[in-house]
Length: 310
Image (cartoon, rainbow, N blue to C red):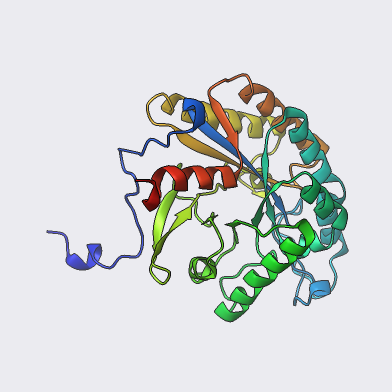
């Protein structure tokens, strides 16, 4: 017999939808919902310029870079490519295909690029807060993390003209979801990677359900910066295509969603952008695909599966 202490009071859900996933009822009976995310982080990374003790070491062209206790001019320059060039290359590509994007916007980064903020506001992009700083919050106090959350809302609302309705820390802590739920103004968070469909969790303090729209780290250009990841655009394209094809086949009986993650300083390089162009050319040949934003997903899920929908 299984010991009770294995099953009782365990804070993780290891079963999810199991082998009977919910039918998501995508618009127009789509077999798959495809959702693209562009992370905008440049200008909010670790740097002594930002009051940090050392330079950034994560997600760049450098392999195992040192953490300098001074300005790391090369690392800064790699990040600057994303804000100066990469972001515009990616935005232009998706504009040419008329496919919507969700921006995972780090508030400090957006504040340092007013031209981008004005463009995102004018074009009414879907904005999901990616926090105030592009930092690892695992060992940051709950009070500071909460303060950063409110700062991010304030800055993004000021720079883009509307408050973010989604949240994604990325490098979150054990406190993150509680802080997000207690703020009360978010439709969803994406600090999870554990499903191909959205799901609700209970917000006991507010006595209401909270939506989680899982994100992805595998169908993500960050794998170009991993030693075991992609080394060229063909590998990225094939992984995107295989992921789409598998989910599309399943969609005949059990439709799912496909999230795709991008970074301005990574996919925004000329040698990588063609992989995404080829993928967009491929997926736009299908009629039964729903291209959506994360806000679209959230509103659809709440309308169709929230407690008030029955």
